[in-house]
Image: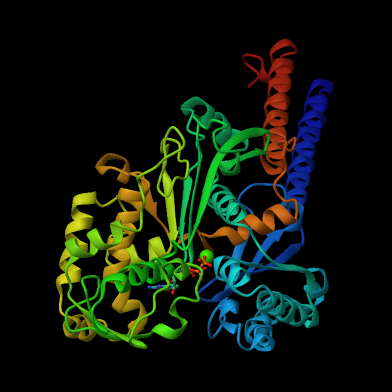
Length: 501
Ligand SMILES: Nc1nc2c(ncn2[C@@H]2O[C@H](COP(=O)(O)OP(=O)(O)OP(=O)(O)O)[C@@H](O)[C@H]2O)c(=O)[nH]1
Ligand SMILES: [Ca+2]
């Protein structure tokens, strides 16, 4: 064997060895590391009920956007915690069953390090206004129960309407991936310049929130203004929470107004179906801070409501809840509250979604035009109660009987309250979940309290580790081939010379 051939063989052998070594490195480097999962628990103590959420995320990716996922939701049996004002010691124990469920979902080795937060919203804000000591007792009862659970208790408090709006906005934009894109996606997005955030519309039982980024946000109303720096970008956000404008309290407000003009103990209500009947107790009715300013002495203790099923009349009736007469700012929604011009897309969740989804108007594929929405609600309201009840036998009567009112209320709030028009109505997206996570304030609350949203963008290499190793292997292969080719070209071995091969 000639010496050139020997060298060629050795070179070939070495290159093969190098390639094998590189592939081995690539494979071992990319072996999935043992999963290190972290968990967090948030209890949403709403006015109508409490939900317990369990979230999980990979420990090493804590600061990436979109990595925290909801893995469990547990609906607490019975009323919201504010419903325990007459038996405050029972508020905490009502959470036991859902805490047990959380214990089963989260591996026991992780219990001690899993943070648990409870945030109470409008129901407790109202109870605090009505009876502060009862509200304190309810909170200390839930705190006692949560401290006894094996998790890392981080607090139980009433959150403000501003926080509720802000965290709802953070949740949906975190889940939609509006805050940050990494690697190639970021480049694509910067080319298309589509890194806009979505506004958030939340309709609860006792309050409703509107939150969105506004370019024209002036300093007219500082209490409606929020500034965030998230992943290296500044956001100027408008938010407002209307206490007493959640759908249950809006109905109470409407009935309080109706009671001002009733002449007998029976009332014909256009917002309920024909043939529907309901009785309400007057004695407690005006204790509620949402109705107390309409307090009136009445010669009867019970009010008999009978449905009339008239959408137009119902809308007119509801419209009176939105006072548009005075506005001390450049523009207002209602009741003299500042509202800058509406901007961008909106995600509408909780009761906005429950109601529109029931009426097949959530338009998951493409938004349903406003005139079709109106027609559908109008014809739903006109259906007799017996027919509705027979058709939807497995829906709770409380929910079913109120879809007509709720549909009309949602349209009033959005059209008359916030002044959405036929055009920008199409920018409202009714959504219950984004991926596996419910839309709501809880995820944003946890992300904030666990410092999982950095103010500055973490320095992330443009390529993932896998792509980096792959690219290195590819480059090395190309380099070896080029070297071999060059060597063959300049030192043409005898075996390759004409006549020899
Ligand atoms: N149709 C229907 N209504 C629901 C459902 N869950 C809750 N609701 C009702 O929808 C309204 C809003 O519910 P939530 O968003 O849970 O309200 P909440 O958090 O208890 O109330 P806030 O403290 O004001 O936020 C209430 O009137 C509930 O009774 C559901 O699954 N279907
Ligand atoms: Ca809520």
